[in-house]
Length: 253
Image 1 (cartoon, one colour):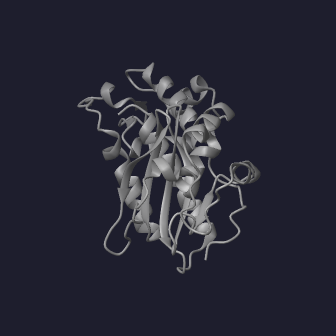
Image 2: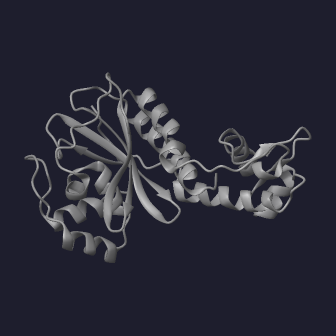
């Protein structure tokens, strides 16, 4: 089973996307293309960092590498075009890969107008989604997806949420006292949040934060509580996927 989630090494989605944005801004200033060294200098990033960022940005279609090994925004390249996809379509490949890699249903939520919204679920017959018998809007306190969002909110936004939502006990393991929940949210140094049968008996959920610009959300998986998983693999896969999803939600395209 998943245990020992206190490990806190891993990529930071916010920092990663900010580096991406700086790199794209630098590339946008060169319609004819810029070398990796130019981009590093103008973005104020170490060359080694830029060399690591360029392949995924090219692979995801945010940059194009020309024949002379310079980089441009897709719209500036010959044959380039624009045609932005809706958010679910942009993130679905990342959620599908997460489902396939971890053999678990994958979920994306965003905090919109003070409520937690399920934006996308990718499951299959062999990796079924959890029965959302209580909507996430009323069960944020009982799910890893919701608790991830609550932990990232500032004190004012969190207090506003609590003022509008009861901490209803959904299973014997649900935390129903606000002070206890806040201590749990603020007491863990790891970005990975887990609920074990707090939402529904027999199901465990693990989640990490994602961002759409300045908007917080969560990316998570669910699976049977009696199924064995490697904690390090789940943590690493989720954090890596969170960077990809945050990039797809935030960057133009």
